[in-house]
Amino acid sequence: MLFRSSRATINRILRRNGLSKPRAAKRPKKSLPADYPWPVGTSPNQIHLFDFVHRSLVGSTWFYSCNLLDQARRWPFLGVILTKNADAVIQFLVSAWQEIGVPAALYLDNDIVWHGSGFQLRTISRVIRLCLWVGVEVIFIPIYTPEANPVMESFNSVWDRNFW
Image (cartoon, rainbow, N blue to C red; front, top):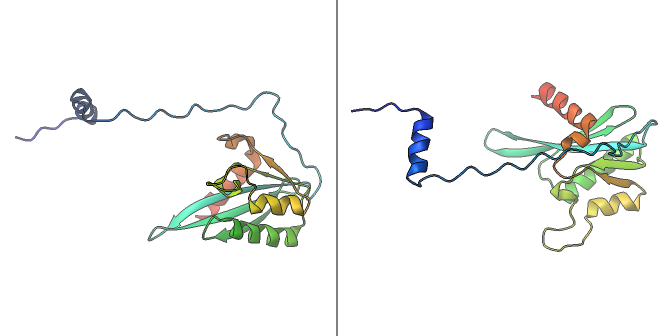
């Protein structure tokens, strides 16, 4: 005899018999304070916004799109890297800055590539050292708050729709 049960009934039976794990709690959504200091670039090369968009191709090959945007001109500079490591990001930033100019500040999220090392605490990554060496101020958005970079996130969604 074949029984047809709903997913909720099956989950209830599994929970009752201790055969399921409780769902992991979601991180509470962080909200930005009312006095969040939004960086505003009114002239070219004052502030560049930077973010990664990652996708996979057939066969699980990952690639990362490096999206750099001049905040005042909304002028994008795009590149594709196959591995998200410091060497690839440095090469992308150098080629971008040679093409469109070195900014006064770089506004970016808290991605793992910006950390100095996962093993050695209190180290500065080579990417951040490059920025400081050429005189670029680095501005990080708060952790888990992509809404702190709305211009870049909007550009990423436009890129995603049009590229794919």
